[in-house]
Length: 402
Ligand code: NAP
Ligand code: MG
Image 1: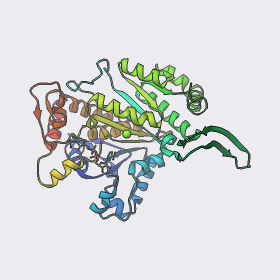
Image 2 (image 1 turned 45 degrees about the horizontal axis):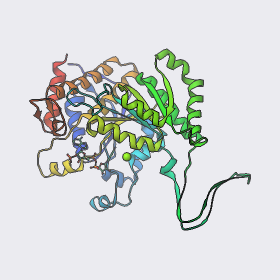
Image 3 (image 1 turned 180 degrees about the vertical axis):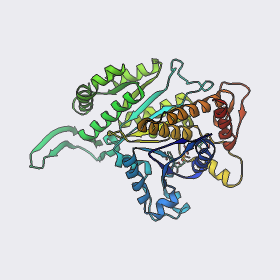
Image 4 (image 1 turned 90 degrees about the vertical axis):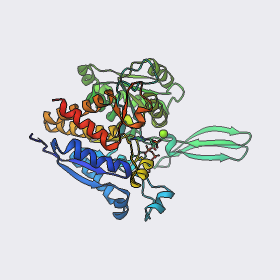
């Protein structure tokens, strides 16, 4: 059989622990036998990030900017324990944070739905994608423990010295105080990423804030989205038959619960943090969540939403059998290859990605799955497979799907 040819390389960002083990199995069994893989390889393992003083992460993000499409394996974000475990020179920053800052992107997370893993919300028939703004608000706050009576003010001093001053509160006793900010440029990037992704995936876009209470702060988010929509996207949305719709955050929550799914829900930073955990657990499993970083100028980085599955990796190192779910990592590859095919006009590559995803879903729906899914499925007569055998079973299904 002739392998599918690629014209532009995808940026391949390898990672750590169990997901690094799965990475190789996926390439050997599911990608390289079918695709003449062109990739520019970056080893983002913690060992190599430490050896290169994290330059490798920056280089990989720049390559992502250059070529447009990347696929990333889960990576360790160092903490105190990792400092000793890997004898690190520094507590290197989260690679995802570094890449996101360079691409100025928004992360879209969506569940992979299969029959037998039913969402806890009965009405949900289609995936709900969460888009989380990744800058500012409470994540870049300053806080004061107010010790006792006194006056709190908000003061802005312009570069020319002009002052804008607002009374916050006259404290009669102890309390707390917080200052938060955001910037128009970041909100606009977030809006464009969301509009582009909605057009890309042909799904409606919902956006919600609390603008009735926060008449300047949240209202600015609402206004920027609306202005950009009217000026740049309205016609394209109408042509694509999709809708942009703004509502209050509490109304959005109520509607989401009663919806069928099948849309993108754009959230401010805090709302996205909270709601993405709700959506992923309500849909069943973090191991079945895809994640893609989309920049406002249309660069893509595909990954799994889960981490490096450290506990399974230590079992693997001891030679014990693991049953780690590779679905989200396989979908990161198919997402990246499909996008590459779309951008380069290689329909065979897009069809290959579709077929591989179909094979994954059929394998699970036929009762063959990893342990994490076997524990929550409503299917009977399930066969629990180990990490490698699941990937091999997907290959068999793929081959049978001609
Ligand atoms: P994790 O790797 O997501 O795993 C937490 C637990 O969830 C696992 O122990 C396992 O439960 C279950 N799980 C997650 N993915 C699974 C899969 N594919 N198949 C089966 N079970 C799965 O989170 P963590 O253990 O908190 O973090 C480990 C490392 O990952 C950390 O160093 C963290 O910095 C990093 N991390 C990276 C990313 C990223 O690169 N995007 C994201 C998050 C975390 P059981 O043990 O009960 O089987
Ligand atoms: Mg969170």
